[in-house]
Length: 105
Length: 139
View 1 (tube, one colour):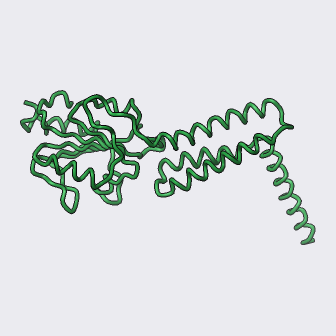
View 2: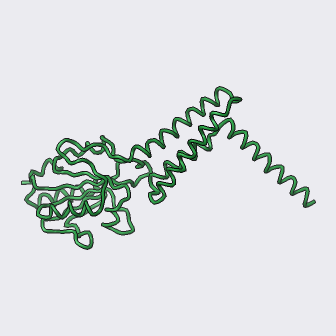
View 3: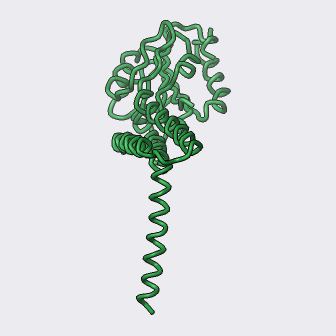
């Protein structure tokens, strides 16, 4: 999906967090290596702090959200322009959002 | 009558206790199983993680001591002990040393453990650009 987006200014934050019973260690080379794009920054969030910041009291995972230029994180985490979960179901909506922006041109 | 019932109950408990003691002498399975379960639970009971890992290490040490003392056990039980011991040690080691993420692909910054302030700063520094945030589970 990221290959279709040519805009070098796009920033992607991938946050790995333990959710499943099998997630008792940080992401290995196999997981991290699946996203080789240079515009990506990857994090390991063992305490799910970002998930708590996005939606307090619920675990947010397998989730994608987009934020247009100008949106800043102030007191609370900002509302996404597009968001969806699980990613496998949200991917069509994400692709549509991409086509609606100038990023993929 | 009551004292007879009490005596029967006490002897039953004693029999179970001695059977467990004998089993744990020859086969410290329970100790290693506790270490493994505790290490596994530490993966998702995050607030208790340091205590669970410490408990796992303690159980492993106790299991090793038990295993070293068991001279009178048969070869098969010793082999089973060795298998359980290796599994438990591997699980606890994965918990202790697997907390550091793998290195990032070429061209990306190193995979950092997320601190909310740092992440907020990175998010806001890129405020003039479109940003995508993805939350995933490693497995």
